Amino acid sequence: MAGFAVRHSRLARLWDDVEAARSSERTQAGKTPLRSDAAHAARSDTLDALLAYAEAIESLAWPVPRGIQLEIRLYRSLCGRAFRS
Image (cartoon, rainbow, N blue to C red; front, top):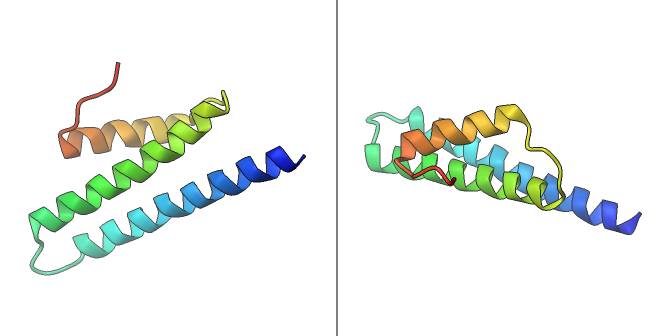
């Protein structure tokens, strides 16, 4: 049972990181004038947070939710990062 609590706590922290990155990205997108370098950095932070969350899920041999997979693809395209095979 303790192992489950640790895994749940880790996933919860990583999800909080995703939410914080998304919030920061929204804040950055709402600034005038929009700085493309800052917007790109915010998108990259969101992608990093999503990847960490997905990797933690995969490490438990759980399936990564389809919505998360799609969001990762979108952010990889926006950030110009290669897809892993």
